[in-house]
Image (cartoon, rainbow, N blue to C red; front, top):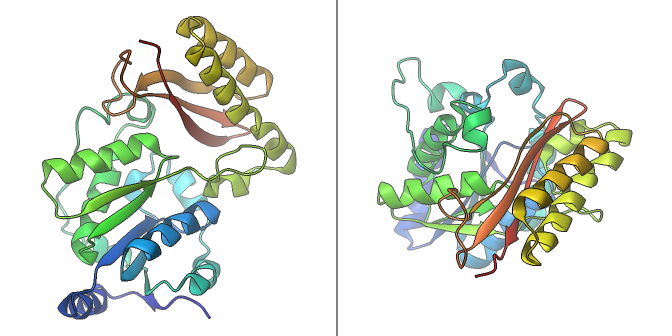
Length: 283
């Protein structure tokens, strides 16, 4: 049995009112569809914590820098609904773009600081689109908690900052990155990799994990990153857009004694892959 699909915003809001009228808590899992085990892990976490679980499916045009990338993004709504059925999802909310962004829509949400390096440098405007759609989805579904994967680490920090700054009454629950057996972080974009590219893609987490071990062992960060960059280039990643060690919360320069994160974005046969790992810096 598939998860029930709701499209009109009025119907979704009516259902939310009924659940809240019964004192039930609502967990939200925002997605752009093309669901995989990483998404399902978020749903399971929401199911454990909340009385009701809403998954949203909306391919947000405002967070794509390349119109062709938006057009090629996988759209598998019926398959997604079937995947969610066994997890007892209460609603798969699939809003129409015209309801999310009416013709006279004139508001954009911008979060500064955490959005500026890394993805912010390479994808101008991307995080404005993310912040705007996340705020809209929060308003549409009124969740008590929202669940986000740690694979998109910078996005997670954006959402945390957004909720704190706007004093939104919900908890942001981070969930661990889910990986394939060879270590590659699960992503909807992986579906677009050729079999040969998919085999080579495992070099990304391998380089990331090796660099993390070397940094934690006390080797000079610049030397480690240079070697990891060379390993990725040798595996066919071109370009490596960034491979940087950052403070885990602010995404500024890392500070000894504070949690750090090693983040990477690289292209493989025209497919952009991102990943990150936690790094413990020596004091």
